Length: 241
Image (tube, rainbow, N blue to C red; front, side, top):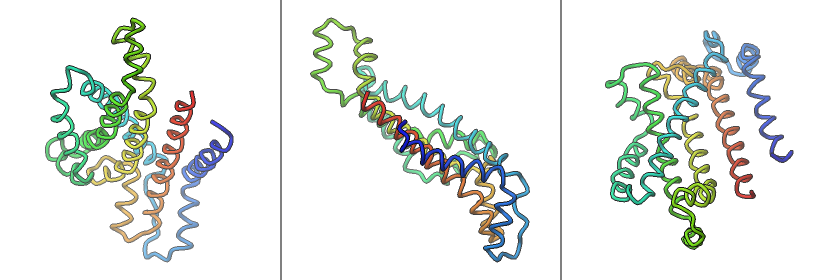
């Protein structure tokens, strides 16, 4: 990363870390600004809720990336062409559902807790990865592939040496979109007992307490922006390499 790219990420990360460390001081300061009837603050330390939130995002993100890449590679290959439309319709259907509705559908099957939230987050994060993987691999210039075949390269080497590197930038854009979506959607997981920063937002709405809402919403927003900036820099580095 260049210095001008590191500065915004470092500054936002510093703000997030300071907020996690001095969460109680942040509450006191914010209650001095907002005149609310109740000023109890969060019963659970902010850093505990942050770790719960981060854990949901990381676990669901890893699963979504593995499944998304596998499905995207499969439907872009010759054996997977006949299943392409079916896969796209199923995944698009999952993406079309609002994240809250998707959680509500999963909970009666799996039950309350992190398991249902993770399943919903994985489904919600799949579409950008599958679509971009498919678009990146099928968008490789056919002349490059023909040239590689003319040089005697096998299909496996063409995939690893030609297709995948040329499609990497598009695939990463899908992963970036998926990651940002997951960070935001994980806030709703609190509604099904999965914990995370959404607990503060839900409790704040119930108690009409803007401080609790901000205490949950600000870290989520910072996480999403930091993740977006980092992934953009990774994309730029690959596009120039």
